[in-house]
Length: 262
Image (cartoon, rainbow, N blue to C red; front, side):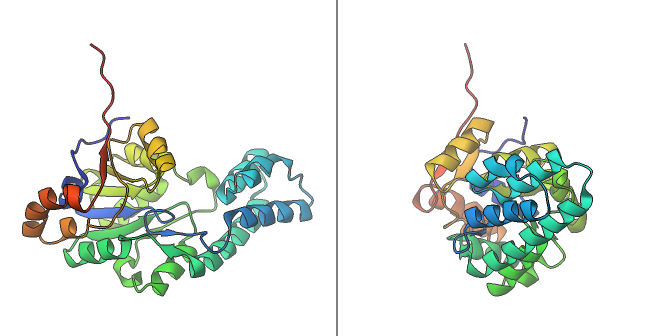
């Protein structure tokens, strides 16, 4: 998948008129205090209580993947919109509870505030519920920076990333062209959605597993921390003068380019 080329995270940030943040990962650890495994188990239990076979969601429960439960239910019960609505509502309630106990991603709030101060437009593009995002942002005093620009899960799980639906909505709501935006995400689905929407991408890989996931799908630029990126998001002068200074001192940047054959 072809993405607009960039050489480092500072260049990506300094050229972006709008930054689209994935929520769970780049902004916070949503299920840090309210386990994803428990959420997936309760969704499976609700499915059984409604008289449906929970076997199709067993793999998602083992993987502690609540969104995977929704996708599996849609696959096996594609015409049952009422069932999907019930499970989506329960997941939203669980995510709102989780948002109250979520832990902030180091450097994220500082980066958000620096981008807003520099006049960069901000939006959230996530597979989680808008209600959970709104709750978390209000808790940390970041809500006004994203007012009207929280684009999360819709009733149809087919529109979850890697479908670019939430990115398209964010670009429309902010009035920014895809090439002038930047998405910060931590998954293959984020990268694929950004590619489909034509939005440049900065990977956030907080551990070796995430780095492998992003590298394997072709992400060229990723960082292991958001700390230190706030300076690159400041005024144009600060952006130009801080990039070289902070590239190695503040941010560990991984640049992976496709292999070439001779």
